[in-house]
Each structure stands twice: as structure tokens, then as C-alpha cells.
Length: 281
Image 1 (cartoon, rainbow, N blue to C red):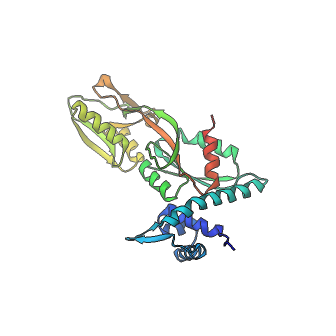
Image 2 (cartoon, one colour):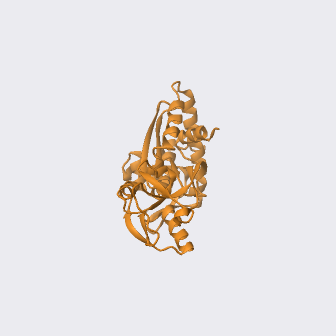
Image 3 (cartoon, rainbow, N blue to C red):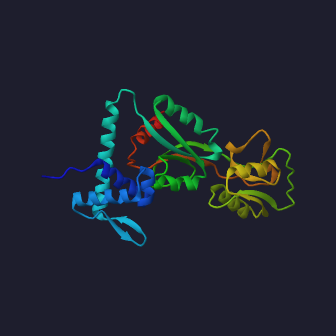
């Protein structure tokens, strides 16, 4: 008789594959690392083949592991869909969304409203941070979906909005084109930093780093203090700021597109429902 696969063991297996480590999978599942290890051992014993192999300090999927991973995602999604369909109160659970600071007041609120109205029993957890780090969290399974300006062909996504990128300074800032341009920049990695420096180098415009910050809160503070100019999307612009442009001798910057990204085959059934809801015109 063919052995039945335990869905709890499959869920642990998929979480380990997404998180990349037993320890991180344990945190996501609320289990100890030893419990996660036992689940994987029991699953390997059940299917009779090795699903993971050691490579350096990390674990990698074997060919059998990659094959089982595809089936495991399908089985978990079908199970969760069936359970959700039997409940009378609609979908429930936790949906974790990552968002960059600059659109937390613009793009994010209507998106959250749409989800909350369609699924009032879903608890939304919002992680506001920087795009590159949020994308890493998405790949590791720490969040379920992310709004980001970055592209990643490994993910499934849709464009939410395209915004112009401007040179933004304080309303009281006095621009002196005879001096190197004082830039207020976020540290690497940053798409805005790259756009700005490439444009200035292309036009042969001298610049200096007047201020560097690790997040948007520091950038806003420095700009409002009049320390310099920052390249940022229109979402940053406030009533105490203004835009410098080509008539000030500054080059035009490329637009940015904000995308909503999810992992294909996510084991959280709420991800697919929320993604489909947001995709609807």
C-alpha cells in the first residue's frame, strides 16, 4: 500500500525550502529547530529517499526533493482551499505585507483597504522597510507579499504604479549651480542613488555626498534641514519641500515602477486570494 503523506510534514518541508534553513523555518512555524529536523527525517523515511543534502553549511534540495516540493505546494494549497471553503465566516489567518517607507502613506493604504473589506477576518501584518531587504525577506518566507521598485524574474508580480523621480530639496533651500551638488543619499543598495549618480556622471555635473542615511526617515530629516538635494519618487514630496529640474541645470531622472511581488506556489492560501483581488481591475 502506498504510504499517505502527512500534510504537517509537507508544510515543514516547504517552509524549510523557502526559508533556506532549519532554524529560520522553525521561527516561521513556531517550532524548535530539533522539531523541524524530526519532521524532515520522518518525511524522508515516509517517501524512502533523501530530500536534502548538505552543501557547505547549508542544505540543498536533492532532485527528489525538488520533485516533491512541486507536489507538496499543490497538496497544501488544495487542502487549505478545501478547509477555507467549508468555513462560513470567510478566509482567516495572517497575511504579512512588506512595503517601502515612501509609499506607506500613498500606495499601501488603498491596497490594505481593499483586502480588509473583502476579507475582514484576515489579520494584516505590515513590515515597512527598504525595498532590497524586503525582497530578501520575501524569498526567505518572512513576508507573504512585497511592494517594491525592484524586479525579480523568480517572483510573480504586477505593476501598481509608475512614478516620476525628482530632485527634491527643502522649500527654503538655495541652489547654487556653481558649487558641487550636495546630495542627500541612502546607503547602498538603492535604485535612486544609482539613477542619480549615473545621470550626474553622464552630464559631467560635480557632486558631493552631503549626508547619508540608512533609511527614509533620515533622508527626510536631512532634506527638511536644508542639507542638500535627494533623488526620490514623487511620493516623498511634502508641503515643506520643492522640486528642482532641468531649468536648474539638473538632468532628468528615469521613472520608477512599484510592483507587488509574491512567491509562486506560496503555501499561504491568503496570498493567492489577496493577489487575485488586487489584480482585479
